[in-house]
Length: 122
Image (cartoon, rainbow, N blue to C red):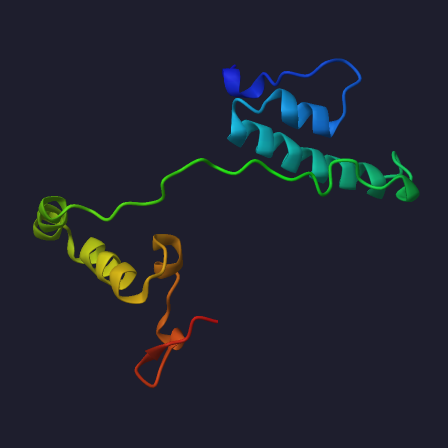
């Protein structure tokens, strides 16, 4: 089993302590809190927890990813991709650049989203 799944947690600790104990791995710490929210909601639905006790994992602020943001492709990489890309890859690439949308959003665009020569983002 991967080290990812071996969370550090003292016996009897709650979701906040679980989150803090895994702070050195921000994504794992955030994921554990997100899973705890779902589990606690389910526990309330099946009657394991009383509704008035609330969800102890809810509203725990998640760690922010430390990043310098995305960098645009250098010109030589862009030119190389444009020369080697398949027609479909080039289409997605051009739509991403032209609309400013993420790849996942672009591949979901349908003709019905385009009205009066404009893209409907909603």
